[in-house]
Length: 388
Image (cartoon, rainbow, N blue to C red):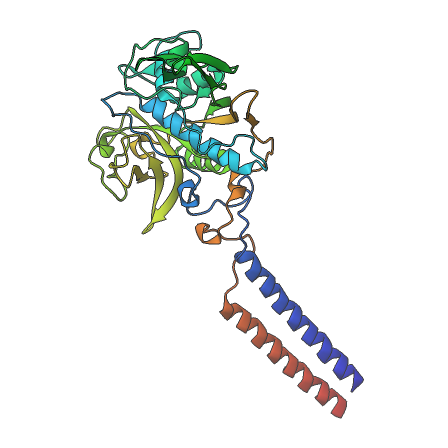
């Protein structure tokens, strides 16, 4: 009889272990820690917008038309990557809110080559790569509070068109002067008084590069490269054919396949902030630079994985090196090599399958039933053996 008891206890222990294993799998399926972007299956859908880590949107066409999509696509991405990078720093030295960039300064000092490379301009356009290169060479993209966007070329590149301050002087008059980028400044103003400024804040570009394109590796592989870069550090910029965006209002943009309706070249730059699936159709979530009255509050959706509008043909990125004002509140970006997406901890935003697979209640019930049946079969066999 003792042998019977020992066997029954062993069977019960096995059943408990199996149930514990089921519970462990259930816990894993509900984990709030996202997978490592380099080794784990990518989520079916993800957007940085869902997590409040995007800075405000721009409109390149106000106060008048300017063909500087390349400048605004890169501005959006740099601003957003900076916001994400700031969230990863434990004690951010920069005390301000979202740091936006002065796109007009890029047009002033990068519309033509003024010593830092030519980024592009309103009339001729430009490229995301040239805009990132200019920002890196310039030593930092000045804050949007330095100079207002005027949608205009030819304003010149000098101290007061990079960052300026304008204050009253005397008898109702006023004056404007340059704000230094690397030192504090005092200037006579306000009826014999003094107006002081600190070095202007900026976003510093450490490195920039191009992702593998559809022409080189195919649309599927290019799509995965885009996803993993978004996971690593934040939104990217991509070229595309803008034709379907002209009449876009909501949903997934009308298909515009390469060599189909005319998507044989790209003429626009947008920011890609995430991806998803709608009724079985995979899409990219993009941010345009045509105002928040365009599309879905300034955002839109384009077919993913098929190089629709050639969106997977040429995508670029930039790594943020730091932000703030030198010598005052400059913050270097974290040297943590982990993925930026580790910031995300809301489980409902993740649609992914753990390597072990989720375990449903039906499976747990089946395991318990098998254990109980095995218990009684073993019990009957032992009773018969003892009786004989």
